[in-house]
Image (cartoon, rainbow, N blue to C red; front, top):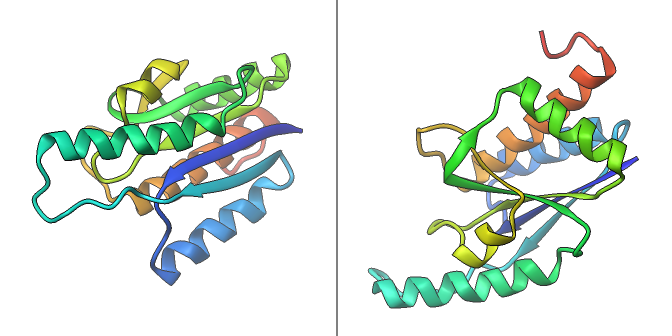
Length: 159
């Protein structure tokens, strides 16, 4: 089974999102060894200066990058990333399943991801040109990973 890890800055705070995440994690068990690793968001004051934001992003990056093995395929979710179709996601998963590389998806905090993380990424993914809360992005990502596996398995879920 393909190891898939979702590294995320911050925790889910609403029961609704926790339940949705748990449901997709249950669905994914048949396709992949999936885990979600949450790292704490750096603390920032109200109305932080750009230098404070950058420092926080760099601290988060250090924690994220420590979790990623050198052999892993990394997909960073960021606004400037490429928008993938569900079929593109299926191909990404299939390719890594064939090579045996673990896949790490990274979701940053409210200020995004440090350039250190983006440089480590093999691909940069964008969910949409619209802005979504990070807790919803996690659910959307889980759903697309599940959809990708069902496409590869020839199941009808994705239709």
